[in-house]
Length: 170
Image (cartoon, rainbow, N blue to C red; front, top):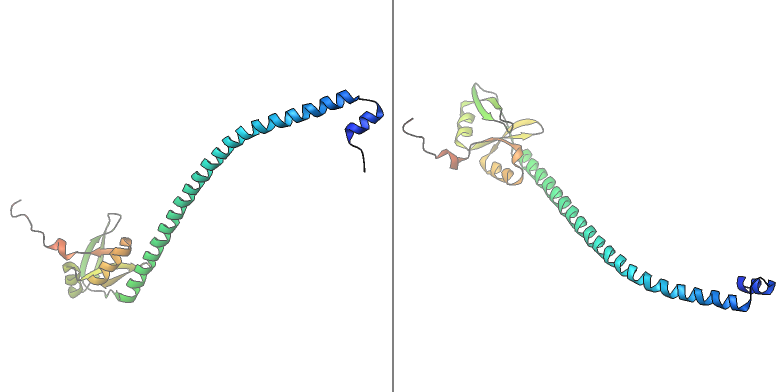
């Protein structure tokens, strides 16, 4: 087995026994002082790492909440589209114009039969969007779709809103 560097230098006569002992003593002192300094910095480091982990955990929880919310919205939208698909009735073209306001504030017009126009006006039917096409759905289905995704309902006259009294005098 090979000799240590200190033993080799001692054997070669480059250092004496006193210098070797002093070097060993300095090494021990430095190692001992290094542990104390490392312990205080390690406490600071531990505290900083703990804070960092807590912040990361909070960030992860927030991202998870956002993902769950987005997933729930997608599920609600899919369920609403399924309801519309299942309960839809194609709009038969007619001579009576039915006007409604879109989400963008534009006034749109559908030409329907008189019977359908009356049902739309009284809140028995509503107009929904299904794959880019306007379709008719009954009021019960409109209520279910509104609970899930309001953006799919294009026009619906809520019967509760129709009972408003008009002013007698202008």
